[in-house]
Image (cartoon, rainbow, N blue to C red):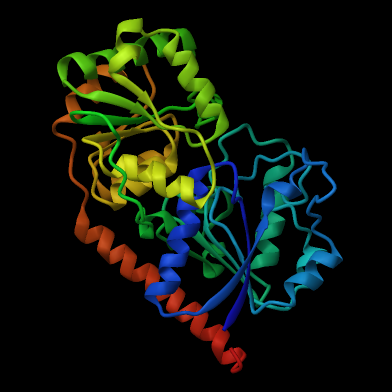
Length: 377
Protein backbone atom coordinates (compact mmCIF):
# COMPACT_ATOMS: atom_id res chain seq x y z
CA UNK A 1 0.00 0.00 0.00
CA UNK A 2 1.28 3.43 -0.94
CA UNK A 3 1.62 5.92 1.92
CA UNK A 4 0.85 9.50 0.88
CA UNK A 5 1.19 12.68 2.92
CA UNK A 6 -1.42 15.07 1.53
CA UNK A 7 -0.86 18.76 2.30
CA UNK A 8 -3.77 21.01 1.42
CA UNK A 9 -6.70 23.01 2.82
CA UNK A 10 -9.29 20.59 4.16
CA UNK A 11 -11.49 22.86 6.29
CA UNK A 12 -12.70 26.29 5.30
CA UNK A 13 -13.79 26.00 1.65
CA UNK A 14 -15.93 23.18 0.30
CA UNK A 15 -14.46 23.77 -3.17
CA UNK A 16 -11.13 22.50 -1.86
CA UNK A 17 -12.85 19.41 -0.48
CA UNK A 18 -14.47 18.73 -3.86
CA UNK A 19 -10.99 18.79 -5.37
CA UNK A 20 -9.61 16.37 -2.78
CA UNK A 21 -12.56 14.00 -3.18
CA UNK A 22 -11.93 14.13 -6.91
CA UNK A 23 -8.34 13.01 -6.29
CA UNK A 24 -9.62 10.00 -4.35
CA UNK A 25 -11.78 9.19 -7.36
CA UNK A 26 -8.67 9.30 -9.57
CA UNK A 27 -6.89 6.82 -7.30
CA UNK A 28 -9.92 4.54 -7.41
CA UNK A 29 -10.08 4.66 -11.21
CA UNK A 30 -6.40 3.71 -11.37
CA UNK A 31 -6.79 0.93 -8.77
CA UNK A 32 -4.18 2.55 -6.53
CA UNK A 33 -4.47 1.45 -2.93
CA UNK A 34 -3.22 4.30 -0.75
CA UNK A 35 -3.11 5.25 2.90
CA UNK A 36 -3.39 9.04 3.05
CA UNK A 37 -2.59 11.31 5.97
CA UNK A 38 -4.00 14.80 5.67
CA UNK A 39 -2.02 17.83 6.83
CA UNK A 40 -3.89 21.14 7.02
CA UNK A 41 -1.91 23.83 5.20
CA UNK A 42 -3.89 26.66 6.80
CA UNK A 43 -2.02 25.89 10.02
CA UNK A 44 1.18 27.04 8.30
CA UNK A 45 -0.18 30.48 7.36
CA UNK A 46 1.52 33.58 8.75
CA UNK A 47 -1.67 34.60 10.55
CA UNK A 48 -2.06 31.23 12.33
CA UNK A 49 -0.52 31.25 15.80
CA UNK A 50 -2.08 28.33 17.67
CA UNK A 51 -0.10 25.65 19.49
CA UNK A 52 -0.47 23.19 16.59
CA UNK A 53 1.02 25.56 14.01
CA UNK A 54 2.55 23.74 11.05
CA UNK A 55 6.15 24.77 10.53
CA UNK A 56 7.97 23.93 7.32
CA UNK A 57 11.29 23.08 8.94
CA UNK A 58 13.66 20.12 9.33
CA UNK A 59 11.14 18.24 11.46
CA UNK A 60 8.61 18.64 8.66
CA UNK A 61 11.14 17.27 6.16
CA UNK A 62 11.76 14.25 8.39
CA UNK A 63 8.03 13.61 8.56
CA UNK A 64 7.75 13.77 4.76
CA UNK A 65 10.50 11.17 4.39
CA UNK A 66 8.35 8.63 6.25
CA UNK A 67 5.98 8.47 3.26
CA UNK A 68 6.23 7.16 -0.29
CA UNK A 69 5.01 10.43 -1.75
CA UNK A 70 4.16 13.97 -0.65
CA UNK A 71 1.15 15.44 -2.43
CA UNK A 72 0.52 19.19 -2.23
CA UNK A 73 -2.75 20.56 -3.58
CA UNK A 74 -5.14 21.22 -5.10
CA UNK A 75 -5.63 24.90 -4.53
CA UNK A 76 -4.21 28.24 -5.55
CA UNK A 77 -0.98 27.68 -3.66
CA UNK A 78 1.30 29.07 -6.38
CA UNK A 79 -0.43 32.47 -6.59
CA UNK A 80 2.73 34.49 -5.99
CA UNK A 81 1.20 37.54 -4.26
CA UNK A 82 1.78 36.38 -0.66
CA UNK A 83 3.76 38.77 1.54
CA UNK A 84 6.53 37.53 3.84
CA UNK A 85 6.84 34.20 2.03
CA UNK A 86 10.23 32.77 1.06
CA UNK A 87 8.99 32.08 -2.47
CA UNK A 88 6.09 34.52 -2.70
CA UNK A 89 3.42 31.82 -2.40
CA UNK A 90 1.21 30.12 0.17
CA UNK A 91 3.54 27.15 -0.09
CA UNK A 92 6.06 28.87 2.14
CA UNK A 93 8.75 26.16 2.11
CA UNK A 94 12.39 27.12 1.66
CA UNK A 95 14.73 25.39 -0.77
CA UNK A 96 16.82 24.38 2.24
CA UNK A 97 13.90 22.35 3.63
CA UNK A 98 12.93 20.96 0.22
CA UNK A 99 16.50 19.68 -0.19
CA UNK A 100 16.01 17.56 2.94
CA UNK A 101 12.97 15.77 1.47
CA UNK A 102 14.07 12.66 -0.39
CA UNK A 103 10.72 11.22 -1.47
CA UNK A 104 8.76 12.33 -4.57
CA UNK A 105 6.87 15.62 -4.18
CA UNK A 106 3.88 16.27 -6.44
CA UNK A 107 2.47 19.81 -6.37
CA UNK A 108 -0.76 19.15 -8.22
CA UNK A 109 -4.12 20.51 -9.35
CA UNK A 110 -2.57 23.82 -8.45
CA UNK A 111 -3.30 27.38 -9.49
CA UNK A 112 -0.85 30.15 -10.35
CA UNK A 113 -3.04 33.21 -10.87
CA UNK A 114 -2.04 36.17 -8.65
CA UNK A 115 -5.39 37.76 -7.83
CA UNK A 116 -3.97 40.50 -5.64
CA UNK A 117 -1.28 43.05 -6.28
CA UNK A 118 2.10 41.30 -6.36
CA UNK A 119 4.51 42.80 -3.79
CA UNK A 120 7.85 44.05 -5.02
CA UNK A 121 10.35 41.21 -5.11
CA UNK A 122 7.79 38.39 -5.22
CA UNK A 123 8.27 37.63 -8.91
CA UNK A 124 12.00 37.20 -8.30
CA UNK A 125 11.29 34.94 -5.31
CA UNK A 126 8.92 32.79 -7.31
CA UNK A 127 11.31 32.60 -10.25
CA UNK A 128 14.01 31.35 -7.87
CA UNK A 129 11.56 28.71 -6.64
CA UNK A 130 10.88 27.60 -10.22
CA UNK A 131 14.63 27.51 -10.89
CA UNK A 132 15.01 25.13 -7.96
CA UNK A 133 12.06 22.95 -9.01
CA UNK A 134 13.32 22.32 -12.54
CA UNK A 135 16.62 21.02 -11.15
CA UNK A 136 15.10 18.92 -8.33
CA UNK A 137 14.68 15.32 -9.54
CA UNK A 138 11.96 14.50 -7.00
CA UNK A 139 9.62 17.48 -7.59
CA UNK A 140 6.88 17.64 -10.22
CA UNK A 141 4.31 20.42 -10.72
CA UNK A 142 0.93 19.79 -12.37
CA UNK A 143 -1.05 22.99 -12.89
CA UNK A 144 -4.83 22.87 -13.05
CA UNK A 145 -6.66 23.90 -16.22
CA UNK A 146 -7.40 27.47 -15.21
CA UNK A 147 -4.93 29.37 -17.38
CA UNK A 148 -2.10 29.06 -14.87
CA UNK A 149 0.25 27.61 -17.47
CA UNK A 150 -0.19 30.78 -19.53
CA UNK A 151 0.72 32.87 -16.47
CA UNK A 152 3.97 30.92 -16.12
CA UNK A 153 4.79 31.33 -19.81
CA UNK A 154 3.94 35.03 -19.89
CA UNK A 155 5.81 36.01 -16.73
CA UNK A 156 8.69 33.54 -16.55
CA UNK A 157 9.16 31.85 -19.92
CA UNK A 158 8.54 28.54 -21.69
CA UNK A 159 11.65 26.79 -20.43
CA UNK A 160 10.06 26.06 -17.03
CA UNK A 161 7.44 23.85 -18.68
CA UNK A 162 9.88 20.92 -18.81
CA UNK A 163 8.91 20.15 -15.20
CA UNK A 164 5.38 21.56 -15.33
CA UNK A 165 2.35 19.70 -16.71
CA UNK A 166 -1.25 20.79 -17.12
CA UNK A 167 -4.03 18.51 -15.90
CA UNK A 168 -7.72 18.81 -15.19
CA UNK A 169 -8.57 20.23 -11.82
CA UNK A 170 -9.37 17.31 -9.53
CA UNK A 171 -12.88 18.71 -9.13
CA UNK A 172 -13.67 17.45 -12.62
CA UNK A 173 -13.42 13.92 -11.21
CA UNK A 174 -15.73 14.62 -8.27
CA UNK A 175 -19.31 13.36 -8.15
CA UNK A 176 -21.44 14.08 -5.05
CA UNK A 177 -22.28 10.86 -3.22
CA UNK A 178 -25.53 12.27 -1.89
CA UNK A 179 -28.55 13.02 -4.04
CA UNK A 180 -30.46 15.26 -1.69
CA UNK A 181 -33.63 16.82 -2.98
CA UNK A 182 -34.39 20.10 -1.26
CA UNK A 183 -37.82 20.14 0.41
CA UNK A 184 -39.11 22.85 -1.95
CA UNK A 185 -41.58 22.70 -4.81
CA UNK A 186 -40.67 23.59 -8.35
CA UNK A 187 -37.39 24.30 -10.10
CA UNK A 188 -34.63 26.39 -8.61
CA UNK A 189 -31.51 28.25 -9.69
CA UNK A 190 -28.42 27.66 -7.53
CA UNK A 191 -26.49 30.87 -6.89
CA UNK A 192 -23.06 31.26 -5.31
CA UNK A 193 -21.84 34.79 -4.56
CA UNK A 194 -18.75 36.07 -2.81
CA UNK A 195 -17.27 39.08 -1.07
CA UNK A 196 -13.56 38.32 -1.14
CA UNK A 197 -13.36 37.81 -4.89
CA UNK A 198 -14.91 41.19 -5.58
CA UNK A 199 -11.76 42.79 -4.20
CA UNK A 200 -9.35 40.55 -6.05
CA UNK A 201 -6.97 42.05 -8.58
CA UNK A 202 -7.64 40.77 -12.09
CA UNK A 203 -5.36 42.45 -14.61
CA UNK A 204 -6.56 45.83 -13.40
CA UNK A 205 -10.25 44.88 -13.29
CA UNK A 206 -11.81 45.60 -9.90
CA UNK A 207 -15.35 46.34 -8.79
CA UNK A 208 -15.76 50.11 -8.77
CA UNK A 209 -19.21 50.45 -7.19
CA UNK A 210 -20.30 47.72 -4.79
CA UNK A 211 -23.63 49.37 -4.08
CA UNK A 212 -24.54 49.31 -7.77
CA UNK A 213 -23.42 45.68 -7.95
CA UNK A 214 -25.70 44.70 -5.06
CA UNK A 215 -28.61 46.57 -6.62
CA UNK A 216 -28.15 44.75 -9.91
CA UNK A 217 -27.62 41.40 -8.19
CA UNK A 218 -30.84 41.82 -6.20
CA UNK A 219 -32.67 42.64 -9.44
CA UNK A 220 -31.24 39.48 -10.97
CA UNK A 221 -32.58 37.38 -8.09
CA UNK A 222 -36.07 38.89 -8.20
CA UNK A 223 -36.29 38.60 -11.99
CA UNK A 224 -35.29 34.94 -11.84
CA UNK A 225 -38.20 34.45 -9.45
CA UNK A 226 -40.69 36.59 -11.41
CA UNK A 227 -39.81 35.88 -15.04
CA UNK A 228 -38.20 32.43 -14.88
CA UNK A 229 -40.65 31.13 -12.25
CA UNK A 230 -37.81 29.57 -10.29
CA UNK A 231 -36.81 29.75 -6.68
CA UNK A 232 -33.27 30.85 -5.86
CA UNK A 233 -31.03 28.77 -3.58
CA UNK A 234 -27.95 30.56 -2.25
CA UNK A 235 -24.98 28.30 -1.50
CA UNK A 236 -22.07 29.49 0.69
CA UNK A 237 -18.65 27.87 0.25
CA UNK A 238 -16.73 29.81 2.92
CA UNK A 239 -17.73 31.94 5.88
CA UNK A 240 -17.47 35.22 3.99
CA UNK A 241 -20.04 33.96 1.47
CA UNK A 242 -22.58 34.08 4.31
CA UNK A 243 -21.71 37.76 4.75
CA UNK A 244 -22.17 38.30 1.01
CA UNK A 245 -25.60 36.66 1.18
CA UNK A 246 -26.56 38.86 4.15
CA UNK A 247 -25.63 41.98 2.18
CA UNK A 248 -27.71 40.78 -0.76
CA UNK A 249 -30.69 40.06 1.50
CA UNK A 250 -30.72 43.65 2.71
CA UNK A 251 -31.46 44.75 -0.88
CA UNK A 252 -34.29 42.30 -1.59
CA UNK A 253 -37.95 42.98 -0.69
CA UNK A 254 -39.26 40.81 2.14
CA UNK A 255 -41.95 39.11 0.05
CA UNK A 256 -39.28 37.30 -1.97
CA UNK A 257 -37.27 36.30 1.08
CA UNK A 258 -40.29 34.73 2.75
CA UNK A 259 -41.12 32.10 0.15
CA UNK A 260 -38.92 32.19 -2.94
CA UNK A 261 -35.34 32.30 -1.63
CA UNK A 262 -33.61 29.47 0.21
CA UNK A 263 -30.23 29.66 1.90
CA UNK A 264 -28.32 26.40 1.99
CA UNK A 265 -26.57 25.62 5.29
CA UNK A 266 -23.04 26.80 5.90
CA UNK A 267 -20.85 23.95 7.11
CA UNK A 268 -17.52 22.40 6.19
CA UNK A 269 -15.86 19.08 5.50
CA UNK A 270 -16.39 16.21 3.07
CA UNK A 271 -19.97 15.47 4.14
CA UNK A 272 -20.88 19.13 3.75
CA UNK A 273 -19.30 19.08 0.30
CA UNK A 274 -21.43 16.15 -0.84
CA UNK A 275 -24.57 17.78 0.55
CA UNK A 276 -24.01 21.23 -0.94
CA UNK A 277 -22.76 20.10 -4.33
CA UNK A 278 -25.79 17.83 -4.68
CA UNK A 279 -27.85 21.03 -4.52
CA UNK A 280 -25.94 22.35 -7.52
CA UNK A 281 -26.36 19.01 -9.27
CA UNK A 282 -30.17 19.04 -8.94
CA UNK A 283 -30.69 22.66 -9.98
CA UNK A 284 -32.12 24.03 -13.23
CA UNK A 285 -29.08 26.26 -13.59
CA UNK A 286 -25.95 27.19 -11.64
CA UNK A 287 -24.71 30.77 -11.42
CA UNK A 288 -21.32 30.52 -9.78
CA UNK A 289 -18.75 33.04 -8.64
CA UNK A 290 -16.33 30.54 -7.11
CA UNK A 291 -14.07 28.39 -9.23
CA UNK A 292 -15.29 25.02 -7.98
CA UNK A 293 -18.95 26.05 -8.17
CA UNK A 294 -18.24 26.22 -11.90
CA UNK A 295 -15.88 23.24 -12.17
CA UNK A 296 -18.05 20.72 -10.35
CA UNK A 297 -21.27 21.86 -12.02
CA UNK A 298 -19.71 21.68 -15.48
CA UNK A 299 -18.30 18.27 -14.60
CA UNK A 300 -21.80 16.86 -14.03
CA UNK A 301 -23.14 18.62 -17.16
CA UNK A 302 -25.26 21.15 -15.27
CA UNK A 303 -26.19 24.36 -17.04
CA UNK A 304 -23.46 26.63 -15.66
CA UNK A 305 -22.93 30.38 -15.86
CA UNK A 306 -19.74 31.87 -14.46
CA UNK A 307 -20.44 35.26 -12.85
CA UNK A 308 -17.07 36.37 -11.56
CA UNK A 309 -14.21 38.86 -11.94
CA UNK A 310 -11.65 36.04 -12.12
CA UNK A 311 -9.74 35.02 -15.24
CA UNK A 312 -9.53 31.38 -14.18
CA UNK A 313 -13.30 31.02 -14.49
CA UNK A 314 -13.22 32.69 -17.88
CA UNK A 315 -10.57 30.16 -18.93
CA UNK A 316 -12.53 27.00 -18.08
CA UNK A 317 -15.65 28.24 -19.85
CA UNK A 318 -13.62 29.08 -22.95
CA UNK A 319 -11.99 25.65 -22.81
CA UNK A 320 -15.02 23.49 -22.07
CA UNK A 321 -18.08 25.52 -22.98
CA UNK A 322 -17.95 28.93 -24.66
CA UNK A 323 -16.70 32.39 -23.65
CA UNK A 324 -20.33 33.52 -23.62
CA UNK A 325 -20.99 31.43 -20.50
CA UNK A 326 -18.52 33.56 -18.53
CA UNK A 327 -19.90 36.94 -17.46
CA UNK A 328 -17.62 39.42 -15.70
CA UNK A 329 -19.10 41.43 -12.85
CA UNK A 330 -19.59 44.63 -14.78
CA UNK A 331 -22.65 46.88 -15.23
CA UNK A 332 -25.26 45.06 -17.29
CA UNK A 333 -24.44 41.55 -16.07
CA UNK A 334 -28.06 40.93 -15.00
CA UNK A 335 -29.50 40.88 -18.51
CA UNK A 336 -26.66 38.72 -19.81
CA UNK A 337 -27.26 36.14 -17.07
CA UNK A 338 -31.02 36.12 -17.60
CA UNK A 339 -30.57 35.57 -21.32
CA UNK A 340 -28.46 32.47 -20.66
CA UNK A 341 -30.54 30.68 -18.01
CA UNK A 342 -32.75 28.93 -20.57
CA UNK A 343 -30.16 28.60 -23.31
CA UNK A 344 -26.76 28.34 -21.67
CA UNK A 345 -24.27 26.54 -23.92
CA UNK A 346 -23.76 22.87 -23.20
CA UNK A 347 -20.48 21.44 -22.02
CA UNK A 348 -18.12 20.09 -24.66
CA UNK A 349 -18.32 16.52 -23.39
CA UNK A 350 -15.77 15.13 -25.83
CA UNK A 351 -13.12 17.69 -24.87
CA UNK A 352 -13.81 17.04 -21.20
CA UNK A 353 -13.48 13.28 -21.63
CA UNK A 354 -10.24 13.70 -23.58
CA UNK A 355 -8.81 15.87 -20.80
CA UNK A 356 -9.93 13.36 -18.19
CA UNK A 357 -8.14 10.60 -20.08
CA UNK A 358 -4.97 12.71 -20.34
CA UNK A 359 -5.10 13.44 -16.62
CA UNK A 360 -5.53 9.78 -15.73
CA UNK A 361 -2.60 8.95 -18.00
CA UNK A 362 -0.48 11.55 -16.20
CA UNK A 363 -1.27 10.01 -12.81
CA UNK A 364 -0.85 6.45 -14.04
CA UNK A 365 2.63 7.27 -15.32
CA UNK A 366 3.53 9.25 -12.20
CA UNK A 367 2.53 6.60 -9.67
CA UNK A 368 4.01 3.81 -11.80
CA UNK A 369 7.35 5.60 -11.69
CA UNK A 370 7.16 5.72 -7.90
CA UNK A 371 6.42 2.00 -7.76
CA UNK A 372 9.42 1.27 -9.94
CA UNK A 373 11.62 3.14 -7.48
CA UNK A 374 10.23 1.24 -4.51
CA UNK A 375 9.11 -2.26 -5.38
CA UNK A 376 7.75 -2.77 -1.89
CA UNK A 377 4.82 -0.46 -2.57
